[in-house]
Length: 535
Image (cartoon, rainbow, N blue to C red; front, side, top):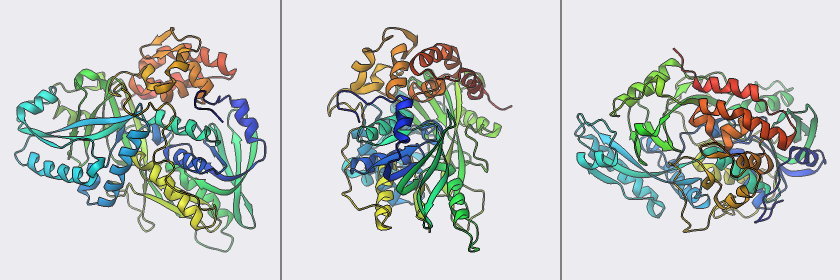
């Protein structure tokens, strides 16, 4: 357990030694994305003993591939899902307050090219303000043509009539996931990445723990727990089906999948295509999706799509139609249209949309982003769906269901409502905008500790020093080059070619820190994947 002044070390040998102790935990969690980490933190804050295992790295999947927005969901307001929007707006403010170095307000401009768009969408966004109430981040404003171009100078001027300015939030998703993990660890939780939950343990027909494997060494571990939560994102059905098979000898029909994966593609281009710290939002594109151009860590994210996928690849590829769609739609609204040669990185996230049990269709646009919590006959608790913004509310709901089913005792809720995450500066402390390039400011109150490590003045590239790599290995669970350059420093998502260039130096530092194989060759191959645009 860490102290306020010294974070806990995350040396892998020590973590695995703790896992081997054979402790009986109150709660075991499978999945180290936003949902699982949120449950771990909430449970640890309530004083429960908690262990979490993740088959890959924390936030390796969907939780590092968001559009980087902390938002109520303008799209969901248009769908009439008022309850989801109201909850998300409330949680948005909570998140911004608890991690201001990683999540911040951001203004958006919605340009209007038809006479009816400003009043139509503007009135809807005024409703968005009303739903937010005191949790609002800023007032929605109707803009003239000149005002729109002043705030968004790269907007296509031809045919522009005006626009609407509104406020939402943005964040650094993978670093927020790490902050959740480290904050939970600071309250006694044991969190282990690269540890795959291969099977469930049972006693008297009820789930009583997990069988896990350290994917680095191949060693197996048996984890005993009073309650097991399956929070594996789009991959939750794998464990659900194993549970169903283990308890299906009476002839009941097999467990049906509850997740309908939806693919969201994002492309990153240089900051000059947007030109400022204001995001562009198009409420209705050719296929009815919302298009964003978001300034983030010195670059601009263009996205996204909503394409059904039946496979569950760890590194899904964009389809040619998705790439063409994003570039073509961007060209309709930006003065200088980005082309394929301008793309610095392309990455894909799989959304775990919850499918109604009688729905076998392939249309994911109408499926809900609301989360679902299910408890099987054996007591396996599964949570999926939802979105990053509402991770804290989802965690409370999961623990509430666990208590209702007698799997855990009921303890006071709301302890995470004002729980600042690791690195959070105090209220009123100035913070660097997330729109700006990454650097030491990303570490919040831990900047001094980073500076105290060897290599603090040795720059590997802009925003990344040798000391930051050592910090990732010592305090942020980093084992592989990918862990550092994809999710601690975010370079793979910002500029895959540059990430490939600095990878050998990162590998050398990691090997010195951990004594483990940092898997350099695998990362170099991954960078090619992030640079590939299908023809």
